Structures are given as structure tokens and as C-alpha cells.
Length: 247
Image (cartoon, rainbow, N blue to C red):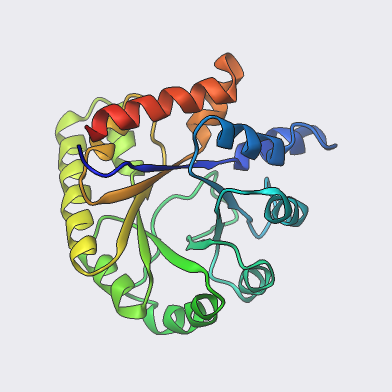
């Protein structure tokens, strides 16, 4: 049996539901506590420029309440850097961000922006945050992430999941192979490997079975499934799929 795979639960869309009507319900911090009870190993929250779901107050409340590590997703902007340095979460995951997108559409272009990103992450590293780059399964991006001093890469599984949903099985399997190859390269370069985006009960198994992967971050599907079965039950079932694949 290979090393147990960590599961990070993204609670952004609990905040999306709350913000649809305003007020305090449902509470993302309560969701984080339920996730912990259900076996999550960490909590992910993305503070966007437009504050469409998670808010500054949510980050403060999570930092004050969590016993699990917080993975703070953010764009590589001075505003977000200042917030991260003030709170000093366990991990900071840099993601590309476009105001018009519904969700994160792709990975960072670390290779093109390596000089700026190297300087951007230096104070975060000095503050004790583990810095992760959210990238596509591309050799140039993996090598650039290692070169600038990131501790972690999180490989974008969105294309793999989309191909599966569209029934494009050859393309799906090719993307899974790319993810596997780039995970192996990243690990060989000394990077810890995470994966996430779009994963469901139907797609998580082959990704969880990749030996180099150490953590999966899953949110939207779990919050959607929670409408029908409850958040704890949804996370427990995802944990079961992950552990089965890991064997």
C-alpha cells in the first residue's frame, strides 16, 4: 500500500450560496469544521479579487478557528500578498485569475513570468508559508516552478475531467498520462505534487492512484453533492474512493 493521500476540501462554494442572498448562512467555517470531522486533511479557500465567494472576514475566521492547515488560494497580486503575509496560512497556492471566468480556467504561466514570481514568493517563503504553483501538466511549467523555489506544484486536472465528461476517452487517457509523467518529473525535481480541479467520484480514482501525488484538493463537486447527502457523507465517500485507489 502506498502513502495515504491527503484530501483538502475547498469551501468556496459554501460562501457562494451564502452570498447569493447575503447574511451569514451557510457558514464556511462551519463547513470547514464538518470537513475535519469527516476526515479532511486540510481546508482550501480562494480569496478572489472581486470577493465573489470567500471574503476577507472568512479568511480571518478560518485562521482563528481552524485546527486543520489552511491552503490559501490567491492571485499573484500585491493586495493578496499583503493579506497572506498578515495571516501567514500554512500554504499559499498561486492561481491565475480572470474577473470574467466562472472558475479557474487553466494553470499559471510560470515559465513566462518566472522572474517576477520568484521575487513575489520570496517573502511568503520567509514568512513560513508553503508556496504552491497551480499549473498545467507541462514540462516547462514544472521546471520553472522548481527553478523559482516553489515547494509544491498543483497540477490542473480540469482537462482530464472534461474529456471524461464528454466521453472523449482517448483524450482523457492521454491527459492522465501527461499528469502522471509531470507528477513524476516534479517529484524528481524535489517538488511535492498536488492535483485538483473538477474531480468527482467518477474521475478521482485514476488520479489518486498516481504514486507521486501527495494531496488532492476538491471543492465544487463535494459542495454540490452535499445538497443531496450532506457534507460529511460526501467527504466520507470521496475519502473511500481515494483510499481504494491508493491501495
